[in-house]
Image (cartoon, rainbow, N blue to C red):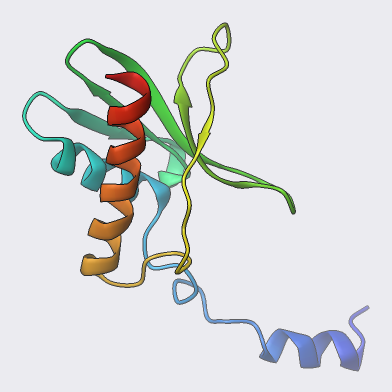
Amino acid sequence: MLSIDTLDSLDDDPAPGTEYTYPISDYARETARVLGEGWGSESGYIGAYGLIWGPGVPTLLLHVIPGDDGGLVVELNDDAYPDVHEIELPDGAPSNPHELREVAERIASVIRRSYT
């Protein structure tokens, strides 16, 4: 049974679709655009992750590691070769197309530095 305190805390929760504007798969799509010709991406299940690939680069997985120490990471989509790189989001999750582009440029920079 719900208590009054539980019901009060539900009022503080953001409405569905308002807390995070873009799924992770949108980050992957925009990153492929930033990386340019020959790069592509694919949405993971319900947009919870994205796959990115390009010329001479194995498929990369962009996803969030859950938990207090978690974060947005890009890594090879192959468990045999753990090579995880965290993506810094100093301003948090993007909430408009300009911010999404800035995050994609950060991801693309990590990919260029680490995988090309």
